[in-house]
Amino acid sequence: MSLDREYDLVVEEAVFQAAERAPSWANTVTPAPSHIPGAISVATYNIHRCIGLDRIRDPARIANVIGELGADVIGLQEVDARGRRFQNMLARRLGAPAERRAANAVDQFEYLAQKIGGQAVRGPTLRGPKGAMTTALITRHKIAAVRQLDLSLSAREPRGAIDADLEIGSRLIRVIVAHLGLRVREREAQIARLCRAIQTGGAPDQPVIVMGDFNEWHLHRSTLAPLDERLGHATPVPSFPARFPFLSLDRIWASRESLVTHLHVHRSALARRASDHLPVQATIRLPPPK
Image (cartoon, rainbow, N blue to C red):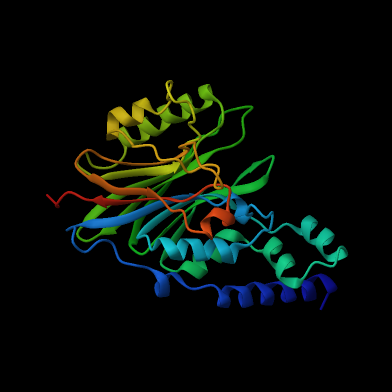
């Protein structure tokens, strides 16, 4: 056995030991509000590559925050798509503990999908200045179909979205998880692509939920107006930065036949440390099946 392989096994063992200490979704979740017929709980969360405000990369901490949410469907952004061997080399030379090296090496999508349970979809893996990242969709419901949306523009950081159909009760619910760019013109083009995808895909009466990090911070010149016109206004709630949130970067929409209620920012003590964003959560009352 090579030294590299022996080290990999040590890292994997430390990762799974950390996973055992983090509560599973099945044990911590609270169901969607039972007093609202046909309601589901959804959330969107930019996990910042599992790096908290203390600059520690801790996937188990992010899994704990997701457990606090108890959502039926959650969309994640900035999921680190591969282990970071260079950081591990430095960590090992600096004498970092095995848990820290394990957190650097883990594929965060695989870790969170296994820890949280249910069904999971990995978005397109995109390589940018921060390394290889992806979006993710994790749900307790059956995933019937998945489409990948490319939102990348030339000369800009790559972006993408997940477009999936979920079987909820006797209906197919369309869920889109997106992460848009930082510049106004970039977001305008990406919103146009999203609107075309919503218009051309799925049945005309299919309920649609759109959520993610849309990086819209302008108060009076919103690039999100086309989505508001198509799906109904998404009430902004401040989710960034986590310590003192005042920007509404993370949004949730539902098609007009649905009703978004109980929209709030999850502000637990753990969530305020785990990422630079806070999770945004909503209850969505779906229309009765036709």
